[in-house]
Each structure stands twice: as structure tokens, then as C-alpha cells.
Length: 309
Image (cartoon, rainbow, N blue to C red; front, side, top):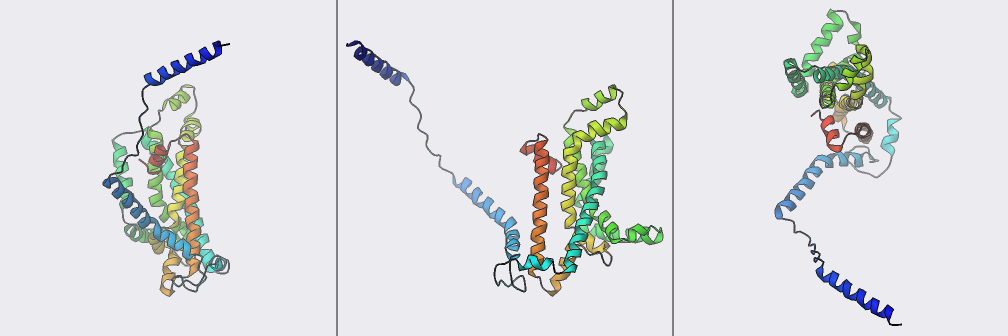
């Protein structure tokens, strides 16, 4: 009758010994943040507000029901409804979207080939070519615009190439310059870190060069190609300076329309279309990140690919 009680007492003694022999768990104390950490956090918030507060303001004012953008009368969707009532706004948005699409196609085709060539056939010429691409990237847009206008006139009138008298063609070619350099950076960054064993294996199996390029090389670079296409599309939407120089009558893109609307006073529908453009840009960047993530890239690799690093 006393055995269960004896066993219980023994277990109690053994547990007490285990508790005494076990090392005491350190008490976690919340580390106090230094003044430098707090200062950097405050500075980071201030920088974010400096960057995004104007965008937030324009999005809020796109719901203004007033006659002018700067005078707030109330909250509503009148500005978005006005877009459907003004053919000039619809035409400007249509021209911008078509131009951005054609420019993205041109930039993707040229930039993909350039990026693959730099990644798979490196040499001294690569650094010279990268220098030229960097020159295109850092050249002020006003310089590109002043150079493109007489060049387009020369092609369209002196050489008789009538396609360069078309406004869509001019805008597409002008907008694709900077975007081509961006796509080249992205595709090169994608392929330069990948081994060429798969392409060599395809050649060893007697595959034709075009087949190897289409099924192996292009397949490896496809996430970067799609990312470059989407980025080229978004970059071509707001090429204001070049578009203002090379446009022709009847093909006024949206940035130039906004620039001319400033003279008569900005209206809420300008902010409404800008909000829609912002949403399109965010969707494009989200698709870029999704494509690269589905390809197996980490967050660091996604940032590296999108910046061409």
C-alpha cells in the first residue's frame, strides 16, 4: 500500500536534483536602441515620405470633384468619369500605350540579343559596348531629343522613308533608346552568372545553333527577357522630353498632353489618368517580381536582375 507513495517521493527527489543541475535559462532583456538607430529610423521614414508623399497627394486629388486640381471641393469619381467624355484624353492615353508597347518590343528584341552576346561571348569589346550603353543611359534626354529630331527628318524626307514621318514610329523609336540599354543590362545580368554547360551539351548532341539558341539560351534568359519587356514598357510611358520633340500632329502622347494642359490649369482628370498610369506601372513591376520569383530567384537576385547589376 505504501509503494506508490514511495515511488512518488523518489520521483520528486530526482526531479528536484535535475532542476538544480540544469543550467538556469538566461533572462532575455529587450536591448535598448541607441540614439543612432533611432536617428537612422527617423531619417528613413523622412526619406520615404519625401519620395512618396507627392504621389500620395496626386492619388488623393484624383478623387477631387472640383473644377481645378488645386481646389478641393469634395470626394467623388467625377474625374474618372470625365476621362470617358473627352476624346482628347482618350487619344493621348491610346497613343502612349501603343507607343510604349512598340518601344518595349523593339527594346526587348535588340536588348536581348545584346545581353546574350555580352554574356556568352565576353571580351574586350564587351567593356566598350557596356560603356556605350552607359553613355546612352546617362545622356540627358534633351540631348537625345535634339539629336533625334533632325535624324527623323533626314530619314523621313531626305531618304524617302515615309514610315519615319509617322508619329507612332517616331515615338516608338525615340522611346526605345534608353529602354534598350536597360534590357541589355538585365539579360546580361541574368546569364552572366549561369554556366554555359547546357548550351555546350546541346551542341554536342548535334543540335543546330538556332535550335540551341531557341530552346536553351533563350529559355535560360526568358525571365530576364520578360522582366526587361515590362520595364521597357513602363519606362516608355513617361518619356516626355523626347516625345515633345519627335511627335507629329495627331499623335500627342499623354506626357505631352499633360505638359500642354499646365498652361490652362491642371484639372482632376489629369490626376485620375496619372493614378491609372501609376497602377499600370505597379502592376508591371509586380509581374516582373513574380516572373523572377517563379524562376527561382531570391529577393536579392530579383533586385540584382531588375537593376542590371
